[in-house]
Length: 83
Image (tube, rainbow, N blue to C red; front, side, top):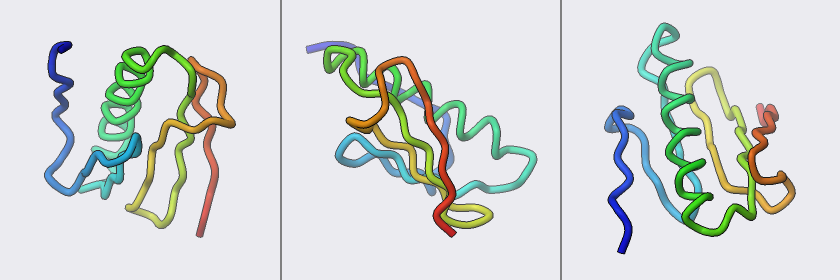
């Protein structure tokens, strides 16, 4: 079994089924939290054979979902708004 994937995301972040839900703590921390989440998913995608890229969805001013998405090529991150 490979090494554990760790992150410094806030406790309001949850990884489940190849997706990560992030509630940002502050505007100042938003970029850092999203980048850490994307890094975690990139490492996960590599461990799964490098098939999917990342879809970043903004649900509100503070709520985001990052997910490994079959419609996004590996090594790519796409963004969308859902609010």
